[in-house]
Image 1 (cartoon, one colour):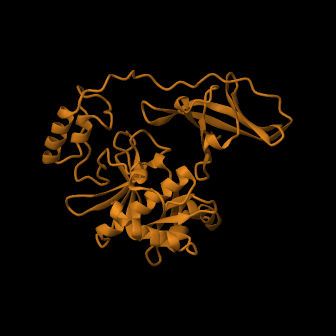
Image 2 (cartoon, one colour):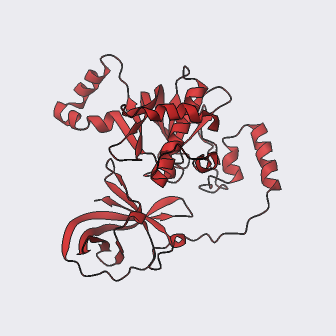
Image 3 (cartoon, helix red, strand yellow):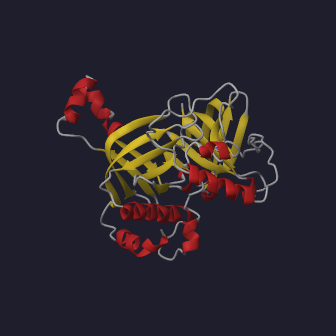
Length: 344
């Protein structure tokens, strides 16, 4: 993968183009391996995947854009009824955008039958949910590898706020996520039915969960690797708890106030857990060029912290959500929590 550095450097060099790289044809699926909502959903049956620049330095988007057959768009607009409403939802219906961040765990896979897949986490879904872009058979393996390399460099720039040209292979390896196989987006058979004696869900990293998506030789190889690994100490299986709120300073002016839901990232499950369905998020000025974020519910004062670069804010305008890092009073990065609130 890291042999493609010069190719991606050439792609990044042309700053006049909004789109850095594109895979012109494929299908987009939403896969829910552990959800009762249904295993797989076809979102776009014909689409293109691209990586685009944004209006901010070191920020890039993964964009999946729907492609229409001749006459299909007009037919769907007629079925929607009111053309004005359809036009208002056009961008959401025809395009999905994802900020290229390491939390997506963006990765690619080329399967035994030659199927080429791009996959990334659905951060707004249930644990284990992910998007899969299944490339058309005409797409070459080299195109997929180059696309993933560009995505890796975009994530590097976002995290370190600097160009990727001087990044070493070791620097980039932290954005290569190959720890889990990508489940099939459209399996020939339905997912394995759970019997009464089986648990309702399996951790994605457990040997039994992996076995459902691996071929027999791969299962034997993985079992051998697992048996040779030293056993790690048992981890206490308790959910992440929100830290106590600190005393907030007196504000001089309230700059913004919104009603929202508050979620806290749980390290055990790898998902955001709802803490309070009705909170008020307030941004206030508390001094000369000093600002404060306060989040309070009807019964709980959840958190307060200064608005600084270390909170690393991420805005998702599709879901009207705001994700940020929250530090405890001693400022230790090891005690960092990741929180999010979604506009109610």
